[in-house]
Length: 84
Image: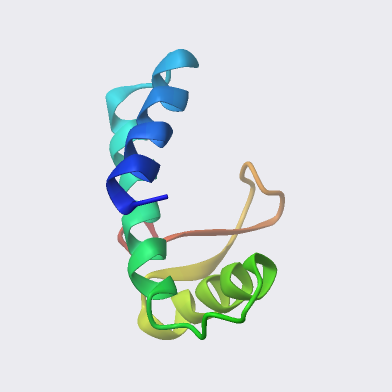
């Protein structure tokens, strides 16, 4: 699947669920970020390893930080640093 096909499939899924435009934009940005990171990973890595490496690398890049407090994910949640 090409990057543009993946983005189109994501947008279709978001629109079917009637999510907001902001949610669609946010999901698209995360997908683009993931697709860009995956290009640099070895081809023999499985999807679990790729996702794990992508997610564990985000705090080191300053993309997200561990935040304490009530939230959707419980007492600790990952969220963009700009919302801290």
